[in-house]
Every structure is written in structure tokens, then in C-alpha cells.
Length: 315
Image 1 (tube, rainbow, N blue to C red):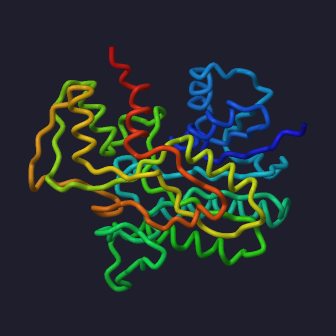
Image 2 (cartoon, rainbow, N blue to C red):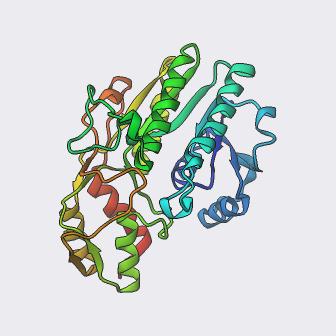
Image 3 (cartoon, helix red, strand yellow):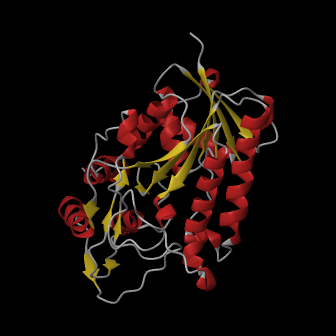
């Protein structure tokens, strides 16, 4: 049987690693892994025990991208965390546009029937998350007072709008709110990675008093959604990809405290830097992915528990 040929852009990224791992569990896929950091991908695959090159190829850079045939393109390219940006928010725009155009031009010029999956974000709804996103949520942008916290949301709105304009092409935006897996870089500075880093280094975790709510998507649920998109009829649209239940900060702290002995301190007015602004309820109630058969198997706390086991491995 002919294998499905899949191009993964940004193959060294956190989300890409989870998808690659799950694709390599099956036999029906051939992966073309594109990255600026091929050594990182090789080390990742070696750690998985995946050295059989007949199921994947690794390409340094993107100069050969247009030379091969693909059934599916998955764009996992990102610009990294706030610390990695080092204040250069222009990368949100330039990097996103560069690789998005690479994929779209490939469909237009080479294989108009291929599927393009673009990893989008809940940030498309804006930076005001006092309540979860819904079908009728409006992204409010003060046009004459645009600030850095607006940039990423604007990028995602622009990207999704562009994709809808190419209505004759098979383009799907997958909006993720939060994502966590055993392959995360603990230096990323996210809420969960800071907790795990504190446990590993026996430090006190400091947090404010707000009980934020997050939706941590399990790698298997994301993979399930990708398969649903692959098997769906021709679609040009966007889907919110969610877990079966979001989780509050207090539940997370209670779990890590009881399971791993996390020590934490609540400081009411503690400041946190965020590239997209503070979000109290960063999750979605828009269940449109169900129309192509997506049903999440894992809750957010399931994701945290299962994937953390691989990182901390308690005795």
C-alpha cells in the first residue's frame, strides 16, 4: 500500500515532535522533516530508537521543499517563547508569513489537491480571555493603540483570513490553546515547565493568586485531530482543538504538590511577562471540530499527569 507522504515544517519544534512520534508508530506514513536544526531532530529520533530512514528523511533548511511530492503539509514553524524572541516581535509577522507562503505557493503551483494543516492558536480570539472563547467571540483590537500583546493575535487573524481567501484550496487551521508533552523544552518558561523545573531543582515555585484556567491538549488528541482532517472531505476552515476538560491552576498546584512534593508560594501581586497578554480563562467552548468526528479522549489534567511521568519518573 502506498504510504501517505507528509511534509513537516519546523520539525524540531515541541508540537512537531509529538506529531512525528505518533506518525512513526504506524507504517502508513512517509515523513519529510524540514528544519533549520537537523542535528536536534536526529538526536530526538535517536532517543526514540527510530533510525530506520525508510520512514523519514531529514532536510536541513527548505531549499528542496518544492522538489518533492506531498499529500499533506503540516506547518509547525514558530518563533519560540518570549525569552527567545528577545524583544523582536517583528518575527511573529516575518517568520509566519515566510513559511505560510511557502506552503500555499506549493499548493497553488504544484499540488492543489494536497492538504495544508496550519498550526494556529487560541490567540486568534485576541488577548481578552475573561471567559472562554465561543462561536461568537469577537477579537477587539484598538486600531490606534496596538501594543505588543496584540501582535500575535493579529498575525493569526491575518493568516487565517488569508487561508479562507484561498477557498479553492484544502487549508485547515488548527487552533491550539495550550499543549504539553514529554518532549517540551523545560527552559521555555511556561507555567508548567517552570513548575517542573522547580521540582527538579528543589526550588520554591512562585505564583500570583489568580486561579487561571488552561486547556492542555494531549499529543494523542492532536494526532487524532490531524487524522480526522486527513480523512475529511475537502475543507477550507478553522477548528478549535481542545481537551475533554480544562484545568485550573489550583488543581495543577495541588497535583504537583501531592505527587512530586512541589513547594510553592502565592504572592498576590506577582508580575508575569506574557507575549500575548494575561489570560484568565484561556480555553474554548466552540466545539466545531466535532463535525468531522473529533472527540478528545484526555482531559487537561490527564495530559499533565501522563506526560509529566515521562519527565520526572518518580521512584
